[in-house]
Amino acid sequence: VACATQDIGTGTYTNLAQLAAHKTGVPLEKIEVALGDTSLPEGPLSGGSMATPSIVPAVFQAADNAIASLLTIGTTTPGSPFEKRKSDDLAFEGGRVFVKADGPAGGVPFADLLQRGNLRLITGSGKSEATFGNPKPKFSTHSFGAHFVEVTWQPEIARLRVSRVVTVIDAGRILNPLAGRNQIEGAVVMGIGMALLEHTSYDPQNGAPINSNLADYVVAVNADAPPIEVYFLDYPDKEINEVGARGIGEIGLAGIAAAITAAVHHATGVRVRELPVKIENLLA
Image (cartoon, rainbow, N blue to C red; front, side, top):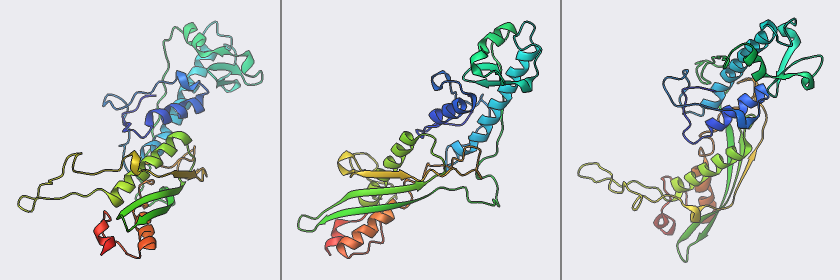
């Protein structure tokens, strides 16, 4: 699978390999993915939660075209066991070409057909529009979610901590539950940093940030991460693509800071209007 899109840590390599394996039946460990090179077929940017759902139709179309070419080779190559068959009589599954009526057990590895045709490989291409390319879509293509947060406030020692987070996400069909859960958990930790820790101070004389390093700019670390429960509704959205998968990039971060400040208000009675939440404002 080759595409000029990028994987910025959001699992694009894994997702595209899974999609190709799902469509062709070729084992996942035999799928190779090449990304991030301008010499590759054009791909969408990695932003706006649009990469994976935008590429899904193109991957499936490319796989269908490659399979169609393979079946044609099987029926037109001299000496092929399917030489006198029609392409419509054949199917491809698990790396084997076979007659539909006979089932996969009677098929042959696709490498054998390529060898008979003196071919090293076959290719198929596909094209799809970016998920958010339509300025007037009939349906929403965004994902949705809700965060539920508990905080612990100890005014006697001026200590505020997020003690529990439950996040429920509707992102269509989840292609990789483990990777998706990890991404949402990471986003929640980022949101904790946004709500409670991260603040940029500027020099009033020249406007330059004065805490632009990891020693002075405080971010959330393992000690700040509470138990995080992530649940996916996993309802395929067939309006967006054949698989029903929507983007999941930003939805884990959206709203978590607001949920934390709402929990802080419930615990302290103080309504915070600016981030990060400052202890001195809660003690005032």
